[in-house]
Length: 195
Image (cartoon, rainbow, N blue to C red):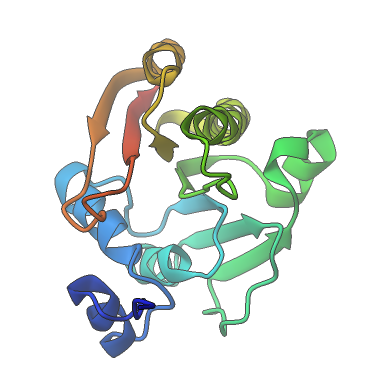
């Protein structure tokens, strides 16, 4: 029997609140705990499709702020006036990508996930590759004191990635939001106080 993707408390709530995906509640929980988003700041959202994090972030930073979303997949939602979209492969980023998205961001968000293969090892490796790109981009575009929120699949490289993060941020914490599905191997690494 096929399960209905909307047959879940957070999925139903997302539909009622007009968010494209339930993932918005993960970011809301992270925001409540760590305050990574602030009014009037610049935020870069990597892997932004289908757009729930973009919409929530645009509400938090308000009209004085700017949210730049990046994804390989075009967005189908109507974007608020303080949101800009760039279609690009984050793994293949270069200096022209940085020039296009800009710098001086207060926060970088990454809810990126690889297309899963069913192999835990392969999926964890693909996840790490996305996370390493998010960390490298953060090193280029975040201003001092900035924050990174990055989804990662729990695997053998989690400690190594956290250690890399500690070279860039004053504090690195792990969180699995309550709104994450119980069976999910995802956790979020939050880097605070970019050095």
